[in-house]
Length: 311
Ligand SMILES: C[S@@+](CC[C@H](N)C(=O)[O-])C[C@H]1O[C@@H](n2cnc3c(N)ncnc32)[C@H](O)[C@@H]1O
Image (cartoon, rainbow, N blue to C red; front, top):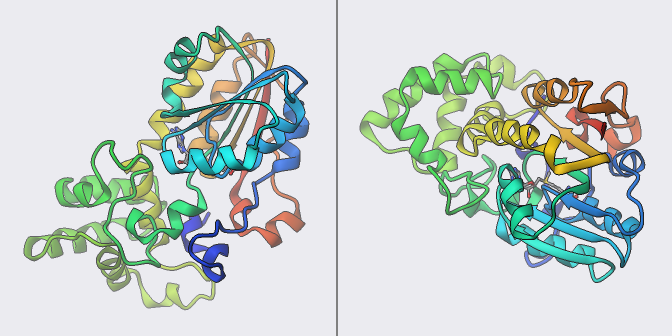
């Protein structure tokens, strides 16, 4: 599995003010299985650039209501402009783990549709100052909500060598996790690690040369950056809390779709959706990208879509 930050960013060739060409992952499959109906109340829990949201809005129409959530505020505005005026839309800057409170505040007892398309969006990777990408020199930040919790630089400075190695191994699936953590621990004794390039250079010093030349096209820093990003944003914790809240927030007959990019995410989704008293499976097996989509959009290669209906 590769992290999207290792992939060429389609925005590279565009003027900076323009958004990158956006290809929502498994768009057709997600919408067909969710089957939004006119007048329904839908939540896009990860609005991003609004690609999925726009397709949902087209189906629920002017009588429907669409709640767009994102923990990254600028993305909400991108999503809103992609959706346009075709349905009633509410923008909510929030982690999706707080969906229950969000619905209470909006006085919506239950919803018909929820989509969560996990992970990062291209503007996050493209902007050096967000610190997600080892391809761009910037502050080592990686927070999706730039005003919430410790940054990647804080974790790299404060966690023990053992804890860092665990993050790289568990979340990044980095085979050389201990060596990378040791190199970080040595280096930070003399100089604080504050930038993406500093960290990427340290990783490249210890990940063996052979692997770099295996022709896989994956930068040695990919997995370490992925692991840190998941830890900084507590991505698995948020997903678990969202999944736990859904049974009471989705009306009987309502549908939920989750697109995940990491085996640890998919495992949690599969487990939550496995409760047959609560969920009926719409997709019997996880749906993956067609050969055509995988060719056009490398990020889609690790995507898994699961869709269920509330019993
Ligand atoms: C892969 S992008 C979504 C792309 C979107 N489906 C589209 O078509 O443009 C994931 C988005 O989810 C947001 N996100 C990730 N985890 C989140 C969470 N726990 N709560 C709210 N938003 C989250 C990210 O900030 C990012 O904008």
